[in-house]
Length: 211
Image (tube, rainbow, N blue to C red):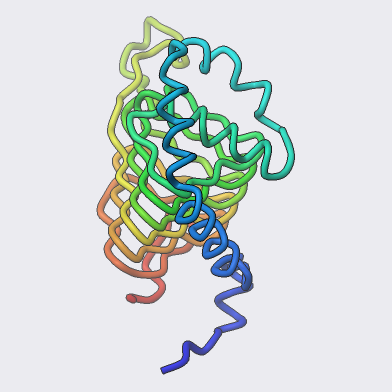
């Protein structure tokens, strides 16, 4: 049965028609040259992790396949886990790489901000859209004797499951658990809680349609 496109939903959620073709091309490259990529990944461990942390900025905005490859290589060295066929876009900011785990066939697009201080995991075949934010902490304001920005932070892990799409400009906040086949619409805010398979949008994000 052929899938029928829904132009209204596609426009609202920023779905790119050619994304599947691009992802398929990336998988093909990894299938063909995976042995070489794994060899480079293994060799990268000869240098200390702090080297990669201090030099990531060199490739942060590097263009094309060259930039994408080195950002991937750095992510492999800096994260808890980084799977195969992972695309890290230009100007992606990650705070506390060691708290981030990435599965296979994942795309993190241009301008994404991830604070993994409280722990962030991204499952296989998921995508984080342009300029989205993933924040695994919350500010508190319990102590009035201390300016609010210096109050303690409350850390809570974020779980982004497999086959999840977080669209452009969305915010995923501490304690959010996005289960498999969940979509968070552009500009929406996913707060603490469990999001079962479905299409969510709004501030805060609410279920629009179950999948």
